[in-house]
Length: 331
Image (cartoon, rainbow, N blue to C red):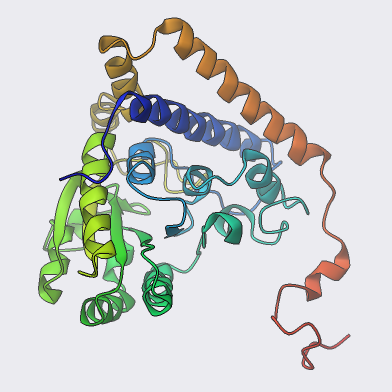
């Protein structure tokens, strides 16, 4: 029995949230090309259903942690577009005070714990956050995202073992977009069904259509209920696809145009738009209104980032240690 039902409001929220993710990312790509955003930058375009479908099945108190393709996750958790864009600009008003950039976004207020550049580094951290929730006696769940390349890290095996042993309230999610950077899954493993890695730990696991927010929602809903009931973790393999390269410096020549078009035909935003119109949840006028609203949010985020100040030089010495007068920071 679903704890969080899918209804008209769910579809309307999915459309708006996924459209914001898509348009925000498209603008991010443009700004990177203009060198307004520096460093590494990994876009989420095409994978929006994996986050939108998860958020609709979770509670605001639940936490989320992910790798460096993190802009959409931050938006979904409620971090403002202004503070995310400012962070990518390296400005003081960014959600990480301009110190994290594209890959390292945090918001304690929104229970969003990054944004991690070390491949697989977030997996044991997600288990640790879940351990803290269990220790404190809450019913909160942690959702720990990783890419298909990160599942090769030894830390995954250690985290899975402890999570099952201690029945931690964590949902491990592999966002399998087919490629670890430019290397296909077929070239990195003999076992193409990544979700089966959970079987070695007796962990409930399943493949999920990551292009369909309904499938994602239902799988996450079931996993969240299990975690809240003290039954431990779940491992979900979300089979999705990114339309752009691994990062902005990747021309993605390792895949065919036909493969790309095959997945674009399953675009989650267009699929949700079709359901909204078919079921008469809203009309074209509402669609246009949301498109205008999203454009305004994105445009305002760029203006905010452009006009925000750079961090002061003294900020180099803050946020390093909890103890303000830690003796090993020298002038």
